Length: 392
Length: 210
Image (cartoon, rainbow over all chains, first blue to last red; front, side, top):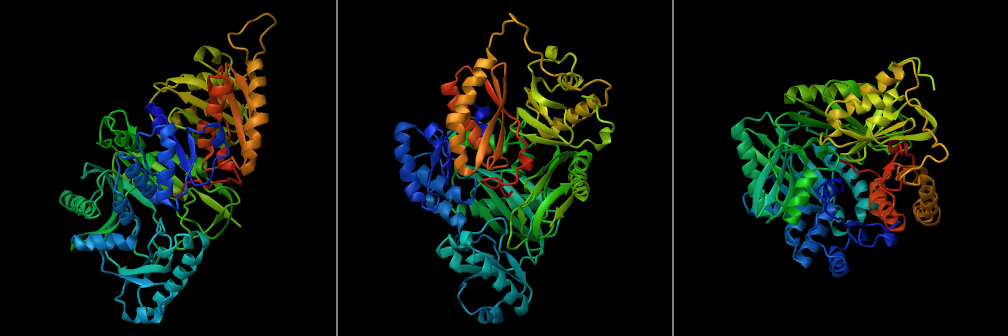
């Protein structure tokens, strides 16, 4: 919303649940059924007869699909529904990437209802069990042998039976088993303009993501990966963009690399999560990622796609344990750490904290900016060490 | 109000509203029992905290609202709050160490001392909109919106219940309340949310995951 305000764009904010004030601002607030994107697009088509719509932007995995349906229906700039849905569903995504020869982990699709002992007996280890639709690494579990496979399967099955996961429908009845790719992980933030991928930032993830669960922690940019390898990573992402037929808009990709080169782990047709995007600034005026995305959707000039010169990083604060959050101590001390620009605690007192793989909601975020990625990383860790989460 | 004894004990949490506005929530009250709005450095005389913030080089502060333990800063500088928040924190701490009250309460206009905007009249109109329209609607999500004050036609409000800490609070404010006031009380020039959203214990919608 802030990005739109900055450039004088009038917004209609669509949400799945009705805003209490929708009747008072029918042009600015709209309720859509995100679970039925086609119906949502019809709804917006009718809405646009009264309140014209000139661009559409999704903000997360689900709304990226809704945005594609709306764009297609209203003939606005955006991805095809086919591309958006292929990017959203991990199995469809892997099929498309494999067909195009994009390096990805070897994968198999299974029914949750299948006998897990049979799968465990025939699977190559180490492997990763992965739901098709959940986000933020929820439900993703590594297994090193049949015993840990069975334990991981039990947990994933329970997660997929939870009401919000089961609401995904058919995808919640399946899961993927794929090879665990050893190596280092990076995240690539990009903007696709007329089928061409522009890399906006490449983030290192200095904490090893080797499982058994895959909770994110630190993202730091610019990447310290050698330039040639960065080029190979960008080319891998670009091949994935083409394979998925993504033509316009933001993408967020997770890749791993080792001595065999880069592997595409995930690609989403949406930007990095809303809080984390605060770490990115572009051009002389330090414009936000959101402003770039809004400008692109509306066909407005984009002043710059060049990220600022300094290093920047964000820590998604690890979930400190299971329980009810009572208090967070040390926030002021954490903010005093040199290079730390902000510490945002997003979990509220009384909130139930659920560790991975069942949970996926980080309790807060730390932001830092400095001359080098190493100093930024050190500042993030230092600030985190000052925080104490009181959990009952 | 006397300054606190030990500023090392003062905790300040920055809570950006957008790139122009940021709330700084203090662990100690700065101005009890009222609200004080400063529309420029010339109004900050006698209030060291406001003077110190207006004096921060390059920040181009255009407005400052102090209420209870919350200091809301509005700036013109495009610099992100992550980059300039620390300077505001330092200014606040330095003002709180002074031997004089950090903020003096708002002066009531003397009889016959005219104002371009009748804030009292606006207050009544906005309060009516809040009582009769906004609050009955946000109550459906367990929320409420409290009108704190109107100064120079700027509305200061605080959200509570399901609105406090809600992931959609800014949508309610900007796409809902702001539009309603623009239509029903067009003399209102702006809205400042002085809610401490980090303390919201029962938000209707969760904040984003990432």
